[in-house]
Every structure is written in structure tokens, then in C-alpha cells.
Amino acid sequence: MGLSEVTVAQAEAAQRIAPIASVQNLYNLTDRSAEDLLDWSAEQGIGFIPWFPLATGQLTGQGSPLTELATQHGATPSQLALAWLLKRSPVMLPIPGTSSVAHLEDNLAGALLELTDDEFETLSKTGAAQPAA
Ligand SMILES: NC(=O)c1ccc[n+]([C@@H]2O[C@H](COP(=O)([O-])OP(=O)(O)OC[C@H]3O[C@@H](n4cnc5c(N)ncnc54)[C@H](OP(=O)(O)O)[C@@H]3O)[C@@H](O)[C@H]2O)c1
Image (cartoon, rainbow, N blue to C red; front, side):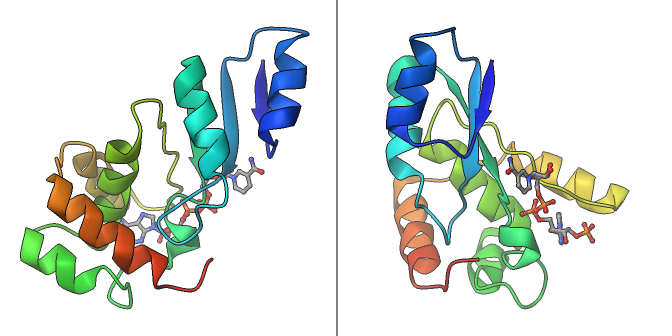
């Protein structure tokens, strides 16, 4: 089964009833309140689906706090936000929403970006300095 918006304790309780395929909690560069569930999912080998992976668009476009870093990297802010998620954990399965084919293609290309450890740390600090979406 898949679970959404659960704590680690709730996921463990559910796991005693039936196998869990995935969990889905709010998680992105600016809101990492589900960090403990993410680590637990990785330990268990369970897929972690971060909803609002682009902070509802606040990490995308010209007004994004990632714009400067993205320009330096030759990428878009959305791609950096998604690449950061994918580097964060091997069980991460982002589901960015979009109404645009161009943005879909942009986001898919983000899956091919590989961040260095330094880039990951810089993005982590940049995201932590932003108000949570
Ligand atoms: N489990 C739960 O409780 C829960 C709760 C909320 C949401 N969700 C799920 O989470 C998923 C994502 O939610 P979401 O779509 O609201 O938030 P999101 O993925 O964080 O952000 C989507 C926003 O980012 C913009 N965007 C996407 N790609 C872009 C790009 N490459 N460049 C510029 N802007 C871009 C979109 O605008 P454009 O349309 O213009 O691209 C849209 O405004 C959905 O599948 C939703 O169902 C689950």
C-alpha cells in the first residue's frame, strides 16, 4: 500500500499490517520537515514521493532563489531543485506538477543532472535560508 502524510510511527504501525510500497509527504528544498520519514524510507527500501517538490512553483522561474546557481550551472531552477532531490536519497521519486509540455521536458532533463557534493551542499544551504512553502 501507499501512505501519504504519515509520521515514522504511523508508517511502522501500518507496516505491521501490510507491506508498504511508498510513502508520500511534503518535501522540497525549502521544507524538509519529513526528513526523518525520508531516512526511514531509505532504511526500509520504500519509495519516498515528495509532494510539492518545486514548492508549488516558488523554486522555479525568474523569481526563484536558485536562479543564480542555475545560471552558473547552465540549468534551470526547476532542474536544480529536482536534481537536489534525486541526489538526496536513492528512494526519492519526485512528482513535479505542470500544465506545460515545455516545463515537463525541462523537468525531465533535470533527472539527468548530476550534482557534485559541493553543489548539493550549496543548494541545501540556499534552500534552508528560504521561507518554507
Ligand atoms: N499527497 C498529498 O497530500 C499531496 C498534496 C498536494 C499535492 N500533491 C501532489 O504533488 C504533486 C505536485 O504538486 P504541485 O504540482 O501542486 O506542486 P509542485 O510540483 O511543487 O509545483 C508545480 C508548479 O511549478 C510550476 N512548474 C513546474 N515545472 C516548472 C518549470 N520547469 N519551470 C517553471 N515552472 C514550473 C508549475 O507551473 P506550470 O503549470 O506553469 O508548469 C506549477 O505552478 C501533484 O501530483 C499533486 O497531486 C500531493
